Image 1 (cartoon, rainbow over the protein chains, first blue to last red):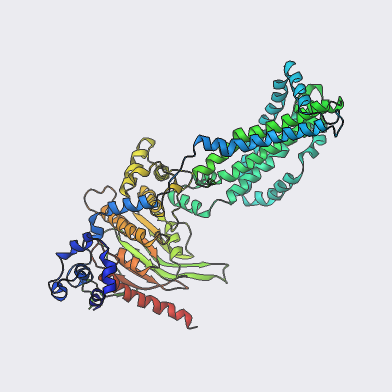
Image 2: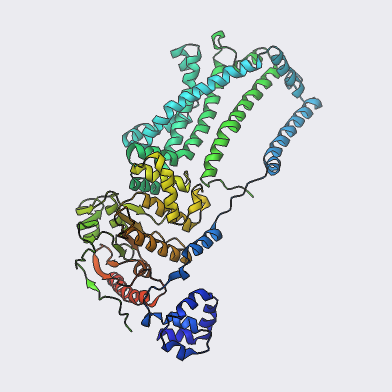
Length: 350
Length: 279
């Protein structure tokens, strides 16, 4: 009998002795009468009765000592993944300090090269001259109007791209003939610099804001649509199956399963779409200058070139860079981080 | 020493009488399924006929390539049979996968609530019902937890709560515990048995029974859980034999009763597998 072998082996007995008294003692009372006679005084006694339980006792008994909830709570506690909050001081040290240091270093280098007099002043003004140029713009009260002219255009154009690119992306992702027809075109448009559209837009739409918006749309819509397509393509099929068994089909399926699942890819597309919007807008403003268009950052740059005012050119480049970085830091990065973190996709580097 | 509590094996095709009268929970009749182009199609399921009674717990057992997952997909309505009919009473069956398949953009509680919402439960009742279901799988405090904050076993329990939220009378399970460690799996077996038993109590159950069709390639798991074990052959899948397991629940996977019948079924399973190596 298998039970006799198990109980008789000292190795099995000692290994099993650690199993705790609750299971063994619980069975002791129900053991067949012949069991103690065989093994009186043995520490394996309780073990043996458990193994021989089938001879008289029913198969069931009282599993896990009757305290399944306790076992489960213990397992949960052992396996739970602790979520750590990073203290503010560490965030400042790890995330804020390095970029600030980098900026300071670049400024110092800039000032150093300028002070060394390697290039003539009019070709390479130092940070001080650019600062003066900024103050000049400031005292004329034009800083915000210049920024706003461009930023509002960029944001409005981006919003329109969002409204067009999202349904377009969904159509391309989900409708096979549309995908076959438009998919390659969308990818191709992404590699076409949208500056190439500026002459066409000016001829078709005239020298006004409509031309600007057309250029922004042609730059951003393909990015946003492509982002959504790749987001949808990367949705694990398991989620779609799970959604369907829950009854999320058709529109409910798109709303509750497909779109939320595709969100990370979509957000990446939005981020790229914004970068494309901003870039194409600057290119368009630089090329198309007209009094009707108002003074934006692109025009500021162009005016600086016309006036051979290198400090103003550098200022315009800096402002364009700052706006691009600021929108990314204030809008897209937090959004992306939040989405990824809530899904456990963002591993905090340690 | 033969375990006396076991009934003799029944040969294929043997009708199993339903414990309670009325329509079966699942009726599968002469189902064939092949994949691929017509003419060059590979048969996956060949003439499967199976009836699951209301409240019954059936395990489908077989080696790789027996089409058990395919069969489950057919019953779940995720795919159509090439020929034959499948009837499921009580609406769309709930389905649990080997992966938890919880939506990572929702909390554990919201995952359950989504199932309630898609079932048409009014908004005001969802939160309370979701908490009750989480409590049923003993995850009372997990409502606001994100999926990635839960352990493997906890995730499968949330998935179970979500499946139960559908309130279907049939629960399909596709190797739901295969990816878990042995300790957790053992605990979840017991949990599943408890919930299934509770759902089929004549008193205090508003939902009128729960049938479970559980797919596995683990013989002991099948014997531990099921009232009936159905062995499928591979390539194509046919029903080879079935056994009724009369051991009382809750069983223990280590017990001699389970082990004894597992030996018998494993021998039979190996016999089926061996046939494939001969030609």
